Length: 164
Image (cartoon, rainbow, N blue to C red; front, side, top):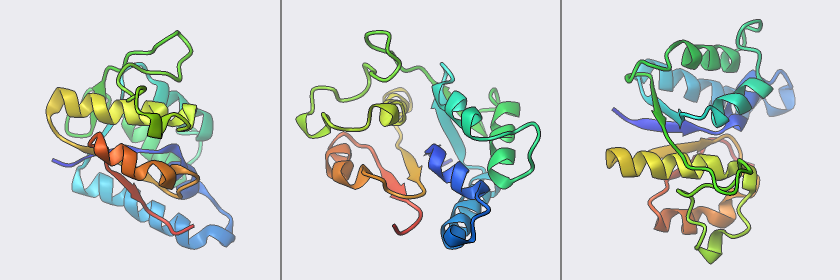
């Protein structure tokens, strides 16, 4: 079974009602539907860092947009290994943005956005624990392109759903 790590921007854009981004919204919605219908499992951290970020950006208990429903499904299936896999990531310095699993010694990643390091740490923790790759899904790039090659050297796969 394939595994994916869904960046928050995929969920946010899937919920978007702005017609200016309709093409990207439709692509994100299609991708979320594919995850559910293919039974791809979603990988998140056991410390709920990713889920808290999803929760800050959605309303899974009150709204019925696709991104909200996707998050609700995850919350309802945290213990179902066919839907969700939880991996432990180890925070450094207690700040919640630095992780032992992140390749902190890689100079090419020194400027990687601190709030996105959890996604990389989860990908690498999943790889270490299960010996498989979980692809990180992005809606739009917003700076990740500068790091794709460096991330790939660590076995991190990134898939961007929309054109800029």
